[in-house]
Image (cartoon, rainbow, N blue to C red; front, side):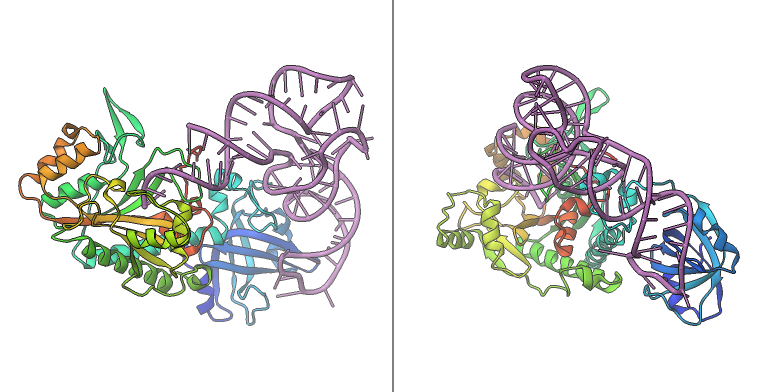
Length: 427
RNA sequence: GCCCUGGUAGUGUAGCGGCCUAUCAUACAGGCCUGUCGAGCCUGUGACUCGGGUUCAAAUCCCGGCCAGGGCGCCA
């Protein structure tokens, strides 16, 4: 069993004997001395092999990326530029790596996306890639602990479903024994049903599937959605919960991940509340740029870039027209063309979509039909609204996109261990 | 779904009708080197996505397939 990590060396005293395990990232052999750069999940150490020591003669047999175990001592003085050094007394090869490697870990060559993802296990041995997932994990942990502190219960809802959440066009169809079924695009309907069950605050972290044939740096066909739903709440309550959750996620990331402030573009937790701008204000700003947005039209990428350039980081766009929002979104009492909805944006990237929901069953049924959907397919859902459904609100947050914008990754696929996109279902 | 671009050694590239027996880097193998650390130096190994077509001649031009990256739409 492994007892020490490479980074533990920083707390050890000179002369102490211990065993380090890891990957032989690089091997350099000179006439009178040899070096192995040993890597484990905590970092790098230079293992120095003196000519008169036993393992010197076997250095040439170790291939890059082989897994080795080194016993040795902590040196009096660290001479390596890596900042950590260890003097080998014996080395055993636990598993030899084949060569050449499918992609180099320390080679000074670029690697294409395709090659990287075809060999993702190897790609992730690069610290700059694996740390994305340490960041993602820490962000999620911060959000999760925050939601738990606010009285939320984490739930798991089905991913194989019989009806579409908001339509049918963009769902993956699967064979479910003798029936047709779909992979769920969102836990939306289930979250709401749980509100009717008397659990007042629920959240779920789980996969969402979209069969859209997009091919962009910000879309995945399978992504991780952080979804919440809260009873006796409106869209403003949901926005507060969201900005605080994000702030706690970032704060936990910055606090717990080594070197976080150096590879993140978000250097400190954002201040709350996040700026808010209404859809109509956006339209008016765009009009100042000579861009006309038609009534009830969605904002496109180019338009969102213009809006996004006015803000430092996160901001909300609120009160979207009802045309561009799903049937379960409630409208403003005084202006029924607009909804109690919001998107959380970071520049032009949409991270979250949320709203206060419709809780009156008759209005909800009408809205389903207005969207051209067959309300009888939603009976399992509508039924839960007829026996005491509180007013409620919630949101869905894309975890990969959140990670992407915080780390300023050029492509959202980088924030997914094994991305599923228009053409990739492997590995 | 529409549109654009690209596929050359393990990896990343140059070449874009004959000078290609295909460039360079990195990797790999061997050698040299007083502790190296993007080590350095020498020698060697290793490649034109697939199928048709045009041509005296195709890595290079045309068509199709497969694979990839991106733009739009749509969305998290």
